[in-house]
View 1 (cartoon, rainbow, N blue to C red):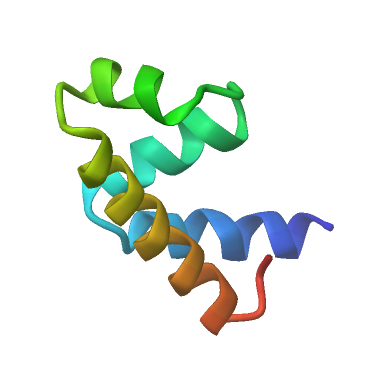
View 2 (view 1 turned 45 degrees about the horizontal axis):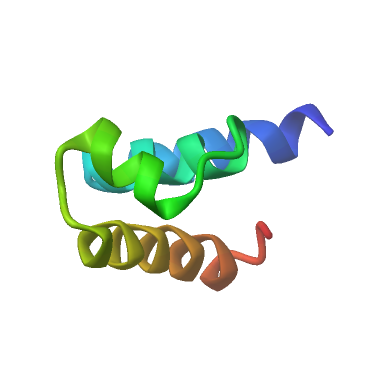
Amino acid sequence: MLEQLERIDKTLDELPKKARRAFLLTQLQGMCYKEVAKNLDVSMSSVKNYLQQAHSKCHSLNII
């Protein structure tokens, strides 16, 4: 379990800062896209792109 968490953390560290933040806000804090967009001061389409980056990276490494 600890190894998997370390892999997730390392993978997220490789993402751009806003993509990492968007992923964490949705996954850990349960925020919706609109809330994340406001929190990061970006558009909702940017949030969608950030989350797509994060999910793609995690899926490519079989993390989630």
